[in-house]
Image (cartoon, rainbow, N blue to C red):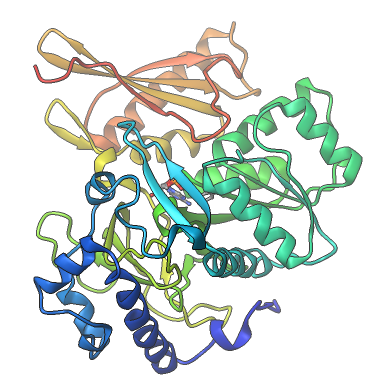
Length: 437
Ligand code: DLL
């Protein structure tokens, strides 16, 4: 396979050149950060008063972590490090608790972010001949505008369709010959489920690629989308605090997500001890943003769980690759004392051919015990009035989940298309247990 690079000199530069560039940019980022009271105080506590106090990349480890809580406490302008007049855009995430966090961008910040996203898109083999339908929400969420700008930068024809409304999505695909889409993986599965009902044949659309991200999904889910829609799916990772999409992305080797190390420094730490894990191990990803002057963030704890692959990538890029993000430290459920990540359940159900495109995890209290129910849509190859295969499937799902997480769940089978669908990030877990009992 021949690989194409957006910025060949940056993407394939030697590790020593890359580290020298990181050091120069880290100094610059520390300089931006020192303009805020928050970082001036934090960094003074560890003896960093000017960017020159960073002598080597190892000095990064002197800097205390920044957390989501810090950002919330700084709302709305605590992390702004340029004059208000130099800010041209903000994005915000409401988060699950409702307290917003805001990220500000200068014109140069937008330019750098756009270049990051363009690099990701181009690296999957897209070019000016592509028609790109951006099926994700626009607005304060970064997925819409971030990919929109990146797509235009590559020179593709960008259709700002936004998320939802599959009828309109299919019409746009047919009218304009869409070749590439961007969506959450759960929305892509929903689109696929709707095709037959809306009378859309695979031959009537020209789709060949999708960028899927903004939520965790398993390798089996990727394979399922690829096989059902007959397209290539690329995993896309990002978070608003690091601009949004464009932080790490799969290349055509599809063997991990290249973290763009000229623009971000990544570390993996043990979330309990806060010490770095051994090379290649899984832990919490900590990111330092080297490319945003208006809201600098140093050693930000993402709460996302991942690890670095060791060894080079077939594509020739030198930027290290992250493993598929399996979830967040705060996603972990404790069910009757057992630690369970929703991704463990997804890995079981999405690997089964008899299972449809949607599932839901429900946890309730029954007396003193927790009760786990997994609601699963059945695939089109199974009929809901034929009890024998249904019972067999229910038993198979139950025993495979139990083998994986040691808990015996209740399994409910549902007709395809009957479980709730979200247009944006899927809500896969309903924890109905009363709090603090
Ligand atoms: O989801 C930015 C984005 C938009 C990424 C479009 C990719 C595509 P937030 O709303 O701030 O930003 O949510 C960020 O979503 O910390 C992860 O927990 C999760 N996440 C994002 N991408 C992935 C992925 C956008 N590929 C949070 N795999 C992150 C797993 C992901 N989790």
